[in-house]
Length: 168
Ligand code: FAD
Image (cartoon, protein in one colour):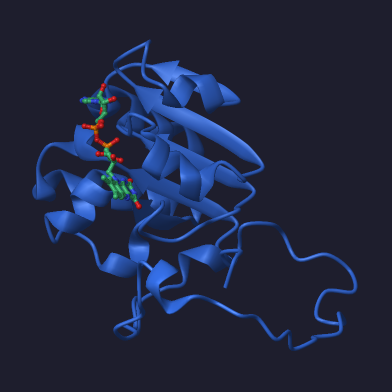
C-alpha cells in the first residue's frame, strides 16, 4: 500500500478504477523492511476516522484523571475523543484513538486540538481536517501554524468555558 486510508476524502467514482497486476523485478537485497504480521487496532472501540467532530487531547492534560474534563467537552459537543501519542503510550486511551504517523489519519470537519504541540508526527494524521482549532498555553506552539482558529490559554480555564458556552 502506498497511500494511507483516510488520507484524502472519498471522491465520486472512487472504487471504480481498474486494478492491473504488474510484474516487477525486485532485487531481494534491496528490501530493507518486511511485514511480520498485522495487529488489529481499535477493535471494540470507536472508529475515529469516521468522526465529523474530533476533540483531541495531548500531554497538556497532565494527569489521567483530568481526561474527564475533555470527555465532558466531547459529550457537550457530540464529538468523538482522540489523542496524541503520549496519551496512548500512557495507556489513558486505547490505541485506536491515536492520531498521527503511527496512529490514524483523520479528516473530520472540525479537529479541536487541546494541549497538543503540533509535532510533525501528529500533524501527519490530522492536517487534512476541514477546520482546525487549537488550545495551547504556548503562543509559539507549531499547532498554531496550522490552525484556522487558535486560543492561547490554559485548557483548565478554556475547556470549562467552552462546556458552559456550548452546553446552553
Ligand atoms: P507535547 O509535545 O509535550 O505538547 C504538549 C503541549 O501542551 C505543549 O504545546 C504545551 O504548550 C501544551 N500545554 C501544556 N499545558 C497546557 C495547558 N494547561 N493548557 C493548554 N496547553 C497546554 N505523536 C502523535 O501524536 N501521533 C503519532 O502517530 C506519533 N507517531 C510518532 C512516530 C515516531 C516514529 C516518533 C519518533 C514520534 C511519534 N509521535 C507521534 C510523537 C511526537 O513526536 C510527539 O512527541 C507527540 O506528538 C507530542 O504529543 P503532545 O503534543 O501531546 O505533547
